[in-house]
Length: 212
Image (tube, rainbow, N blue to C red; front, side, top):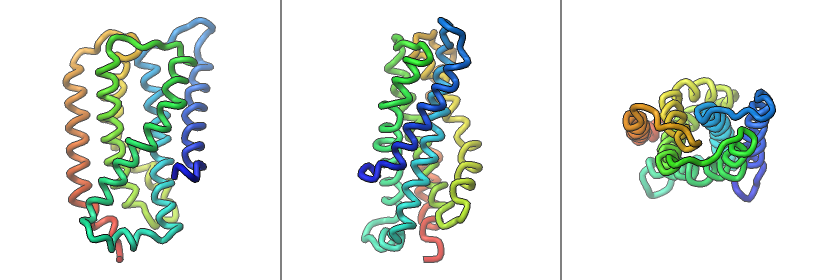
């Protein structure tokens, strides 16, 4: 994926475009709230994630590698964990930090506040949850002619809880007062990660194997 570059560049450009378009809604000299900036950042990240997982599974279909993965002498769940790790650790983080994160600070008039450690923790937890869900849904939509549409329609409603947690806590990283119940939002993120990781480990063998 990193050597091809096409899908990653597309995700980077989409994130930059969303942030730039929203920045045009500000009056000259006006500063957007931290929560508004965090919302735009996570919105661009969510679209980048869908593009990334469509690209990952699309490469497998083009190369006919799904059958080879099923023949590996390891549990099928290892494929899920590998895809989830490739999502947040490589593709999503690579798509977030070179463009959307600096662009959020520059175009939306933000600065890092004292709450950046909590914001960083929320970012990692949110990325893990989104990648866990994206891995499972990507396998579910594999082989479908309308894979992009199916993944988008099913994916976005399900990630609302984890997105809300990421937005509420990450707003603290943009020089904004710590929101009430921040521990509860972090708890929601941890619970979301646990639920969809567990569901993926149970369901992935049935979903990924398909008719093989």
